[in-house]
Image (cartoon, rainbow, N blue to C red; front, side, top):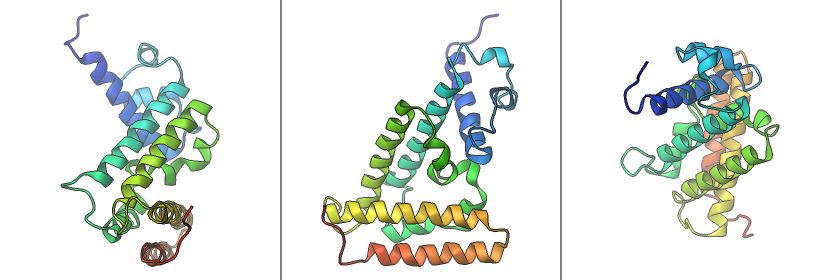
Length: 196
């Protein structure tokens, strides 16, 4: 059977998108290739013409999600207009409930730490890019202080989302989010910080 030009790339992209959402929703270990392929509308046999292993798919799906997150942060038209806007876009009820489309770090950090060295290097590169994008929203974007603030704010936001997702009381979860917003805003306005 002949397929239209671009069919293979389109199919590969669909598998990556499904895997990216599924990994963030269910976790990497809990997401099998068979389930990802079924959700993609394909058979298991269609996996190997696109990826040589699940590890390759994990790396590409994670890279795709991280690139999308960075693009959303740095988009001049639709991206956040200030550090407060970025913080509030991250620490909100929609992100709390929508982990399958949310931050890969908040959903997958413990599992990313168990991945191959090449996957961790890819994550580190994406992390550094995201931090640079966040620092650009601070008053002195090129300074070591702004980099330190961006790293600290991001760590606080990721931890806040993780804790808010771990509690069963929705009111407590929203309280955790708001406390995280206030702490991150305070960090963004901090006159002192590490200069290294």
